[in-house]
Image 1 (cartoon, rainbow, N blue to C red):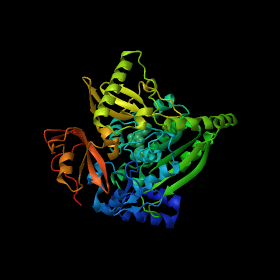
Image 2: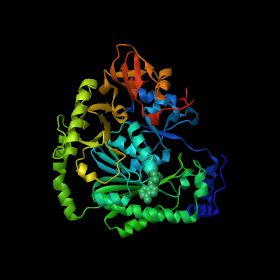
Image 3: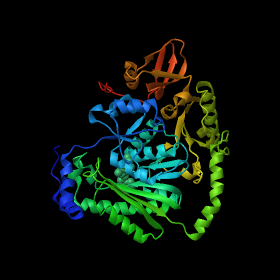
Image 4: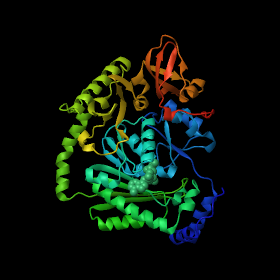
Length: 489
Ligand code: SAM
């Protein structure tokens, strides 16, 4: 593979870090081709299902050793251009980047923060591990990248994630000692991107390493401030530089006696199949008093978790004391009236345990968290590209379902309002281009347009049927344009 020459200062740093023999093997690995990876979205595709087997055959998947849902794929199979990508059945992710969330090990029910989250590789991996239980706040400082993050969260059908667009200091001021798990995949000098993205070589310099280290240090202070006693923080970069990795963590441990290092892991491109990653896993230790409090709260929290999962739990009280509260209540009613008519099988525990939130016309369901009592007031002043699951918009008293809701539904929840297209059908490409589909004249009302995979169907978006036509409700920004089409395999 041809790439610009590696900077001399970079090669010298590698020599002094690895010694001559390993440095040669490492630098030679830049002549090998890069690796390609994807992670199956277990929120939609069960690991042993027929759909998983179909995807394995289609993209010639081979297991990534450090991630149970991660696979290498053959470049020529182009899964990023297949309609199954639009259906959110997997997320394209560099294999070594999958190591960080594996080490963090979030569990269902946890309250998790992903502090530097766009475009969403680690967020979608965390959400899969939460399996719909608990809360994930997924933050990205840059507005455009936060929008892409929100789109990926929606494409993968994630219900219990709030996307915020904030500086780390703004979050730490709001959420001190709040999270069980924090992922900080820090902006870095990107030495592990050199093979994948030659532009990263041009942007690299010893000065940029120092700038990155200073920024990482600042963000880490906010991350530590938000970690609960007993909570865990994974800090990762896609760079090899010790300055941004081990040295930063050593300094952090020296300055925060409440932290202890549980593990440090590297993926090296000359030793494993991956572009390279560094991860440190830290724990905030508890003081004796905090430990006592945690022990006595343990059983109470477990009780709350079980209660949160039980059927029939009422939505948290919404404020009805002002016009905003009244509007929210009316929008919530309008959603339920619509769902009773159009989605009779949709009885989500999530709608029963979350808090409805109205932004203008847009109705969201704020996920419930056992340990972080989020209220709409808690979020005032925060930019929220996605305040939980976007259920739909209420216009002139009529409810219109959101694309995010379509993507979060299972085929079973949408039945009988399911319109499934075969994988190879030209109608799939037509739908993804935003075209109207021909349907039998007796088909009426909102339908979830889905694509078949294995023995199941997976949503692509909403269509509304009347008079033999299914009107396309795929958001304009997500439609394929021009002559582009999905790869035929
Ligand atoms: N975790 C992401 C994933 O798995 O897809 C990749 C994150 S990327 C390595 C680092 C992110 O940090 C970028 O999206 C970047 O916009 C963001 N960032 C840049 N400067 C930042 C800052 N000062 N504070 C917080 N985040 C920042």
